Every structure is written in C-alpha cells, then in structure tokens.
Image 1 (tube, helix red, strand yellow):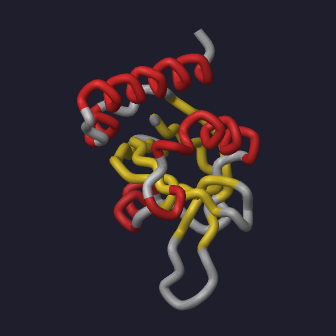
Image 2 (cartoon, helix red, strand yellow; image 1 turned 120 degrees about the vertical axis):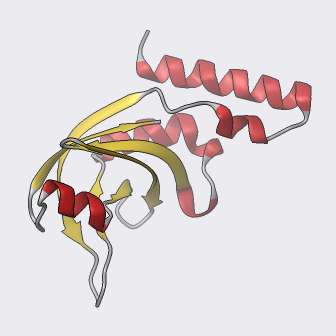
Image 3 (cartoon, helix red, strand yellow; image 1 turned 90 degrees about the horizontal axis):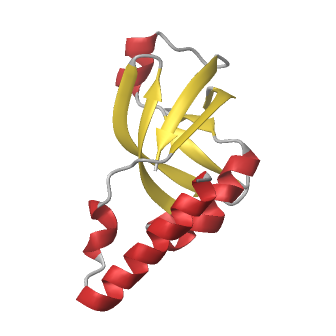
Length: 128
C-alpha cells in the first residue's frame, strides 16, 4: 500500500474515532510509523543563537501536508521521530510558509553526537 494511502486510511480512522468518542486526544496516541527518508543540507537560521535545521524536500512536504495538515498543531507543527546517523529522537517538524516546506530542527545533542557542521549533507529519516 502506498504511503499516501496509509495516511488517508489512518486519518479516516482518527476522524471516525473522534466522532464516536468525542475525544481529540486520540490523535496523539498513534505512534509514528510512516517513514520518510531524504538527504538535505544542514543550515542555521540567521541571527545570534539561530536554530539549526534541515529542510524536507518540497515534494515530500507537499505530500505530508496534503494528507496530515488537519493533524498539525500551532504553526504547522507535526510530531515525528527522527534519525540522523545513529542518533534517533522524538521531535517535531514545522511548516515554513515562506519556504513551502517542513523544517526539522537539529538540536545540539544530535549535532554533537554525529559531529555535524553547517553545510553537511545529512541522510535523514522521519517517522510520522
């Protein structure tokens, strides 16, 4: 089954459960299971103490947003699990309307564990 079909089926199941139970919280109980793998350059937002990110590919972002936008929290936030190298962590991706793509913040502990530098091309997996 295609990833997009799995997202739609899961989304329909969540909608059905919310209608039947009246609880929105059920949305957060599904563990991330749909993998998206890509390569992207590590970059830092401008300004002192700027956050470090990788941008998901635009076509991947559009697929994710097209099927999961209704699950986004504030500022286009979606909870994910992420892995770079041997480091895996729970985090979130954020939709950047100016770039038209989701951004994955790469925290200092991950950068230290993987010896990352600005401009490095990273192989990333996120699970939604």
